[in-house]
Image (cartoon, rainbow, N blue to C red):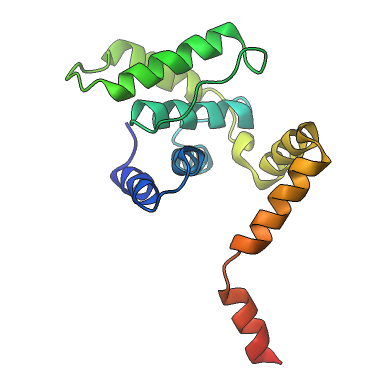
Length: 158
């Protein structure tokens, strides 16, 4: 179950008209914090990201399911299941036995998956797959939407 703050941050993003991936980013961020603070571990950064995306879908974020060819059939099925769970408002409680088993399995994993170095490696690896034009567009958008507070500080210093 996601924390109340995370749900509120995601709702705020939705109200501001931000994309579903931005809203889901809040859940991924929460997951990284959980791994870092030792609540549980993760085998890899990809696993931690997948857990966060699953939580986002189950919380009702309208994330598209991964396209065939980009992910395994099992992953796509799970994403569809999560999406249905997020759209339905059934009062069913999760099975305590299964929840406990998942938590215990994750606790056996390491905490290095959420380190800055491993997240940086993951980001670079994914960016390389996207190609130069996509990276360029991303950089241009980042510079356009960058917070202006840093530029104000540099102006004051001069």
